[in-house]
Amino acid sequence: MTDSTDTEWEYKIIRTSDGGLFSGDTGPMEDALNSLGGDGWELVDTISDSRGAGAGSGQTALVFKRPQA
Image 1 (cartoon, rainbow, N blue to C red):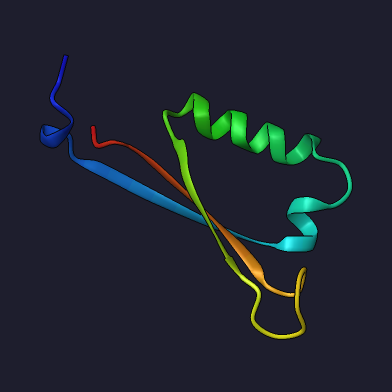
Image 2: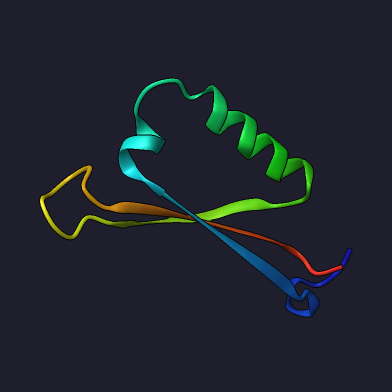
């Protein structure tokens, strides 16, 4: 097994509006996440920006990583 300290990572950040991510049909988001997972991407964090008018007014960033090829 490879020591995790030897692994070099690449990252992907996907930004989405909160309303688009957390409302309505979740099927398209599940399909997108499954596709990213199939390409080796792992969701490692979410970052919410709720500046402005309150909840639902900001964006959410989904942070993915995978080992570099």
